[in-house]
Length: 440
Ligand code: GLU
Ligand code: MG
Image (cartoon, rainbow, N blue to C red; front, side, top):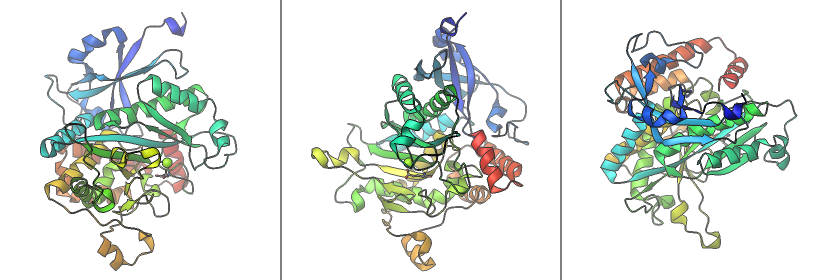
């Protein structure tokens, strides 16, 4: 039998605390049936580390059973990845056997955070994930952003574009980036839950296309201690009940509306704590350094690519309306983060800022790394944690940030991440980067 006539299987998937997408396949024609009660899942799976060990101890032990319930609105299918059978995944929510939401499910955490935002403000969050990665290649890297760099990997970029488009992901750009064999993929803004779903589907589609072309895409935050970082930049804006923008106010500082300013203030207040969730691996902290075009201080900047939250440019060419384009970009994230958890943390932190009526933070220009301590203090610039251990301690010390997640969720995350720290403790930066390049 050839691949084309093989049984069509759809995988019901979940993305866990180490940002690995796992799941179980069902025959595609049974999906409607699987919608009712899902497929089986095991609690301790959420304590799998990136090294394929299970954190020990973990809050779930060896007992218990769950269901992984497909959300049929979040199905991504395409036969354009170059594989013999279609790429076909549907995002799942992990629930108890009676259907109650399960504490360890990341996707549910984002849905809850978005609900809380809606209830408190009437606003919905629109988001998009901009993801960078590097392809394995024996060739000498071509110049940064060059057409040669783009074509060197051909037909990678056109195939990725086609597969994403076919899967309904609305790709915007597949481009050659600055680093060696580095690419970036962006997609059109959509509701925040779908944006996180798309982030997951984009990673898996890119991995599959690369694999089919005999190469490998790595989303590690840092493939080489002296090389470029692979960031995940999360863009967001707010819309009101009629779909009108609530982010932009031409009279506000940097064009920020009062509600968006308070949200950003909350994000910056809790950023040192939530970095543990948005940049959650040991090598993440090789990327979050000054002069890496990433992010290293609690910094709101306007069109500055080292700010943690960047006010993005708007184009007025051709009479385009700034209000429709205006958005903010969170830059302190990478692909070792679960996209649902990263976005849930941003939303909860922002919501705390709105609840407390925080003023819009100062928009800082210049280089915080060369400012005096007094100048940084005056501008509210706090250095982000400089290791995963420090990030976890900072997260655990922020009682409010901890309270946004169920206790066993926090315990699972910390157990997994402490296991990662232990497993990498003796590695040189080179070995650490090589290990994560292969894992992600
Ligand atoms: N590669 C940079 C990072 O690690 C981002 C460069 C850019 O602005 O696109 O986040
Ligand atoms: Mg980029």
